[in-house]
Amino acid sequence: DYSQLAITIPQLLVQGKNLLLQHPVGGNKLDLLRSPFDAKDEPILFGLPFCLFESFCAVLNIFREDGCRRILDLGCGNGRHLIQFMKEGFAVVGMDISMSAVRLVREWTNEEKLNSKVITADMRTSFPLKGGTFDGVFSNQVIHHALIEEIRQSNREIHRVLRVGGLAFVTVSARVDDGIGHKNIEAGTYIPLSGSEKGLPHHIFNEEELRLEFKQFKIEDLSLRAGGKIL
Image (cartoon, rainbow, N blue to C red):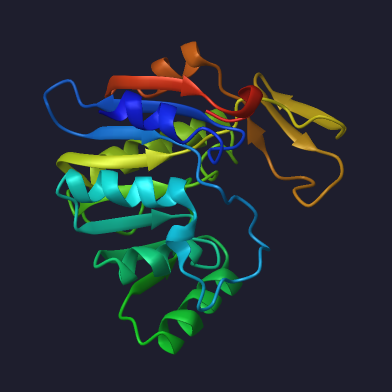
């Protein structure tokens, strides 16, 4: 029961909003839940049992219960989620725009003796991946870092690379960060003027817009996290 799951772990789903979608013809589902991690520069957790963090374990269980095996980690960053997916028996492809991040993932997977494909690609364009390839897509605080037309392109690509009945787990921003100056660059999109994400676009979603932009999926569940900062 996805609604009950969302209620049992709110203390770890910080800053989040939760959405579960399913394709109208009985196909793809998309569940927007907040993982406990979003920063790209966090320390890599070598040797730490990742499932100490209950909310990510819940994500793993959702994928497992839905019969997902092959996962796309979209915006994989330094690989913190990709590594754990693999250790839990999933076949994972990582994708990130940052060449340095991809290099870190490759070094980490080599150290862990894990076999994973990691590619450098821009989520705002066509994914260099075949349609219907994945049982699941995982994307934590990534796709909202774009203009709305680019986000729509990402949404289409997520839908395209998922198999029918596949599951996607995605988080997006739902509120401007407090205490940081910003500049609006289009309706609903701003860039911070300071901080670690200075100059990086942030599109801010509300529930109505989220339902509209993910209309190719059937919405199963929607909930707001941590004071409304993330959907």
